[in-house]
Length: 140
Image (cartoon, rainbow, N blue to C red; front, top):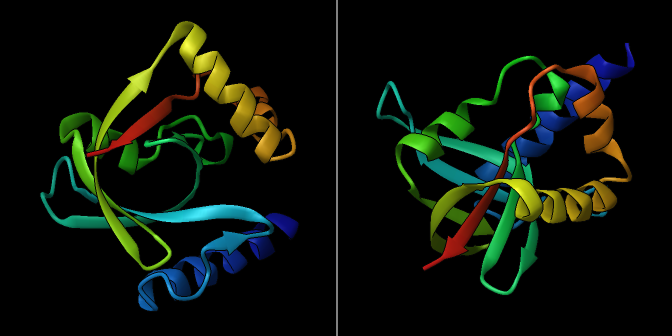
């Protein structure tokens, strides 16, 4: 029941953030959120996702956790196919280039994001056999 309530809450939060074009909803439970706009890897349609992020300088980290499910989120495949995308942080839009990070760089970003999420990403990792990808977006 708790997971369903969280899902419903997140659905409405995402809808409001996207619908208001970033004027409402840029934080979720004290964590910063952005809107990621990608081109669908298969459909070529514009896809929008609201994601928790960490920004350091002109780099932004995203975790492709999908709540610890066995599959990566669709936006991960979209970024892998089309490295250029657009993000909105609040009402500001930025063009970004994306890359997946590995090894030490992945571990550093992972630790920072897991701390931001109160250990939530580590709990997601324990739920799945896949290594959860870490993506870094660079503002162009």
